[in-house]
Each structure stands twice: as C-alpha cells, then as structure tokens.
Image 1: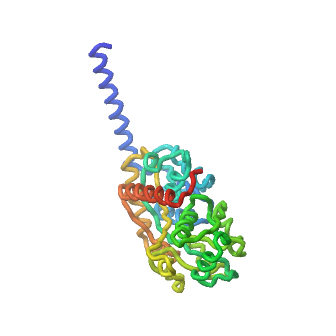
Image 2: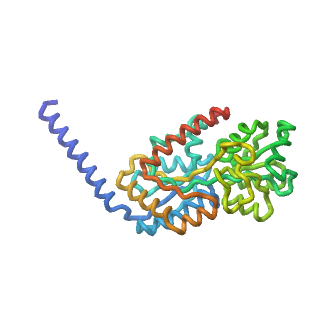
Image 3: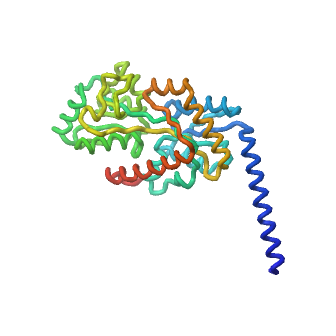
Length: 327
C-alpha cells in the first residue's frame, strides 16, 4: 500500500469515527425519544420489583417518556442480568438489581458477566435492613432463647434462605458464624417459598426484608427476634438490633441499584442518573421508604461505580471467610 493510500485510509477512518461520535452526541442530547424499559431480575412483588416500579414512575415524569418494568427472574437473578448486559447500550434498556449482582459474580464459576466491565453504573435506589424472624408459634420468645438452644444442641436447628448465595443466605451465614452456631442451611427458590415452612416452624429461622417481614410480624404470623440495622426501626421499636441482642458491631443491609449496559453514552447515563436522584429525593418516595424501614440512597454514577467495586470486594471476602463453595 502506498504512503498516500495509507494516509487516505487513516483520514477516512478518522472522519468515520468523528461522524459516529457526533451522531452519538446528538442522540444523547435528545435522549430520551422513546419509552425506556427497566428489567428487574426478580419475581413480581418483592422489594426490588416494588421499589423499581415506584421509582420508574417518578423517573418517567422527569424524563417525559413512559418507563415500563419487566420481570425476568431465573437463575438466581442471572437471567435478567445477562439480558441487560447484551442489550443495546443506548439507555433504553436498564437493569434494576439488588446486591445479588455482586454475589452471583463471586459465587458462580461462570456468571457470564463482570459487573464492573459489562455495566455502566447509573445509581443506587435504597438500602434496607433485614428482620430476623421465627414462626409465631415456636418456643423461641427472644434472640437469647434461640441461640441458647442452638448452642446446646449443635446441628439440630436450621435456617431458611432465598437460595445459595442470595443476600438472605449471606446475612444468615454471617450471623451464624459470628454467633458461633452450627445450623443447617435450607435454601429455597426465594424467601416467599420459604415462608410457609418458617411460619409453621418446620424451619426455625429466616432473615426477611423489612418491608414484607414487618407486616407478617404485625399480623401475628412471625415473631421478630432482631433487626440487622445499626439502630432500632420505628416500625418495630421493641425489636432489638442484633448488636444489642448479643452480636456487637453486627449490621447487614441489602441494596438496590440501577445499571445500564457498558458503552452507554456518558451523557445518557448522566440524564438517567439525574432523573433517578430526583426521584429518590422526592417526598413521596423518601417517606414510603422510611415507612418500609429502608433508606433512600443518592450517588452520582462515578460514586456508584466505586460503591460497586467496594461491595464486590467485600462479598468476595465474605464468601471466602464463610467457605461457601462456588456453584
């Protein structure tokens, strides 16, 4: 190839790249021009689903376009995660996920994604503590009752979870380890599936999201022994924190956040982030979150990206310390 031809080819490539960049900038400036879809990687009715639907409505009002929420549960959340990873990076398909996205990456031999490389962080929505519950008809009247019995009879008692590697599993495993208890883990396909066995006493304990757990406690179906927050919750003022009950320094929160496919233009991510933060700052949502025992979170995309890196590192250490085998 002659030097002239090589220079011509280089110039043509630069012009093409500049044209594509210009087109992307123009598209980003006009964003959004059509409906947006948020994929929730859990079944309908859970904390992630309910929170996302509230937030989506507020974001829609600010962005001026409809936002639909679609549930793609399955594979411990992997189905929805992978679906969004492979979506067009144009801001019109987003993922709403709990910290499961970091957990599954650590636990799976081949999760099929890298949360840092394959997603553009938009921002967090909320963090929520868990409620440590037992069936209302069990003999355990307090946290001390349960731990005393479990220590006296190692291996006899059990705890349920939403599945291996879920937030409720990690919270319970961390608690059992720190409390020095030998308990049997009974994984289910979601906390909802575990609830009948916990309420009946066939499985002794469960860590449940506050929003759904507190309602069942007040209805007399469950008994709350402790909460995983750093201070007592207004909705359950008589229930101690785990730190108060006997595990100093223990706290555990699950978080929910929104991500876009990697490669989504920075300007588009910025607009989505602005709409998300404005939504979380609205009185309606902040008051609803507070009543559900959750705390609204607000971070710029760069901050949320650093948060994800820290969470991934913490989960990796926790899984290693708890000796949870890869799946």
